[in-house]
Image 1 (spheres, helix red, strand yellow):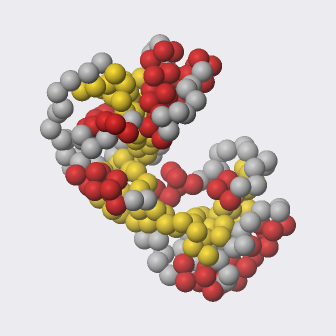
Image 2 (spheres, one colour):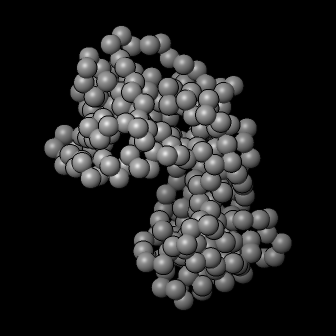
Image 3 (cartoon, rainbow, N blue to C red):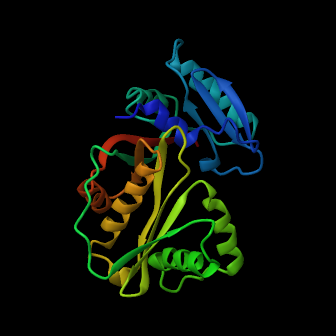
Length: 256
């Protein structure tokens, strides 16, 4: 399986993003957004094995965050250093979120049986605006049938991002019913995102087929590992059926 540090770097390292200021408090690296103050935009990761007392470093990190008027936040994969959570709690941090990270490779991928009348359309920079809009509308309506549909400008903006990632619209009996995409492949890793199915078409295995298809394409395009972030058992079972395996938990600790 792929090393956890590579997964963490893919997920959270913003070193090359000019919107972020780096705060170096070894073994932590903090990323502070220039404008946004939301917790999810301002956090620290564990960049190396600690050589000093971790409690002291956590205290120093908190001071840096507070000096920038940011809420101290640490994101890490618990498989890297299982004891970190205990130390963070001792320093006043609370576990706000824990999400399962599941990984699939070419050796574990299992393709499900095909579904009659199901067609999966790939979207790219060359796709038409209506085709991209259909995918965005399906994604929006999967959460709320009354959701606002995408505008042509939003579809054009999304299409422009498909230079280094790929999206898919799933059509059943000629109608768009599901959507999925994989993100930019970096260091031979990518994330499967936006898996969504319109409510009345759920329970038919459509999301399973779509997810397996997108994963297969990502692997054929050079990815060594495809991962998903899962927060419910039903989704975990879906991805397990097609070869994803739990690797670690993503933990979000916040000091309020």
